[in-house]
Image 1: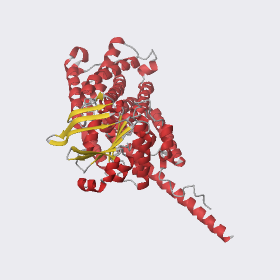
Image 2: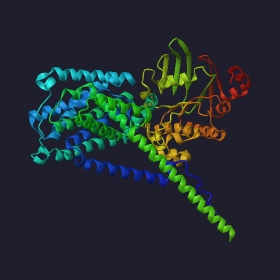
Image 3: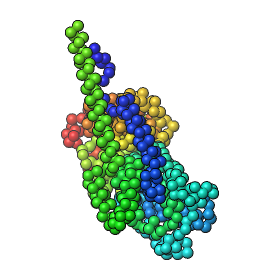
Image 4: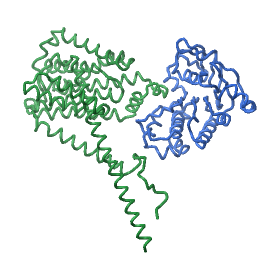
Length: 357
Length: 230
């Protein structure tokens, strides 16, 4: 006999199904484990400065995804925050000789400070206009960096940014140990990004992304929320740019130039928009690819990254992370259906035996 | 609670509302009845502040609101339930419910909501997309009740729903008005309108052509239906 209150079919509402909920939790823990492991062994398998580059770009891509994937704003001027922070971090480190996390904090604050007026003026626009306004502001920052020779070094950039870390020479002189110090800062930034997305504030951002008029009618000042998201995103981009500067020991004009804004959007798209962690995958792919190509003497890196971008956009709209997630979901659902069928099959057999007795 | 005087609205050159005046008192359910294109949805959107191209005055709880932003109006106590229900597909039922801010002390607690809408309690961790039309409608109404909105603007709440669910929504509307909440609703379903409403405004070509209490509306129903073409 079957109990009539028990559902016999596969529950349509997977979120209420305890098996599915446990599956999700397992998946999350497994992914977290893989992520932690990958981050820890990365400098063992690749050249440590390249590993540090991946860290910085991963957080930079996450900051872009916070806007693009979770607020629906495509910023094409994030180089202003990454590069602006790079300069300020470099200047503080050179002139004051403070431990590098302090210098990076200064760069981050600078990035957030310039994001307030830039964001205030650009969040009133959306779509291509928002992208163009942010690009225009970023170009202004580039112009300042290029012209203000006394402070930024113009085309020569800032050379000799020291790594000062409370006198611990292992971190200060060894790029392998430095990686782990940088990892701590990047993880703090990533956890902050995750908290933002999964907070009530993050849900309002999602609501604004999906339908801003509706969010407004529910009582939310859409522009203010977008501005806060913009400034928070700039802060994370600034943190990433600061780490990048300390890792390299110099700041070049390239950091505030527009191809940098394009590159980080590219990483976010390849990794998967709206996945938060996809950007880290995108960053790893692009940084490693550029490193391989340039060390093999190939000059046309853009052709390869451009081709990858086209392939991802045309075939894998949800990026590497999103596509993998889809595949995983499909497998899980197929397994659930099979397990259910098996259970039904068993009970049918049991019923036949009952009838026979 | 809501006083509209001499309201005109247009989309560029096209005038959609002409010199509309109406009132909704606390605890009252008022419907806007009229053909498609008569300007009903525009009227609701103008009250919510989503349609800005207007003239005339809109007062809510004794305060002029026509210059306020939609979010300020929502916080003042106007709750909008759009005809597409406005449920966020990427949020769960519980998240949809608790997304908006609480704007008034009379706001329903989530416990009270789940008591009044058991189906939402059952599906609280479902995604917005997994709900049926009736469930979405209930969630949309529950959401503004949880905000504590004092005036609900309902755009065709019965549209596309099974009769038993329509009846349930009628009961809910009657229940909430006992708490002095006012309801202004658009309705094509005349049976539903006459079950819930105290008064009716007949709208044709952007003007109010008649104001009727429920009894006289019912008495003249066939004639009015023919006149309105619904």
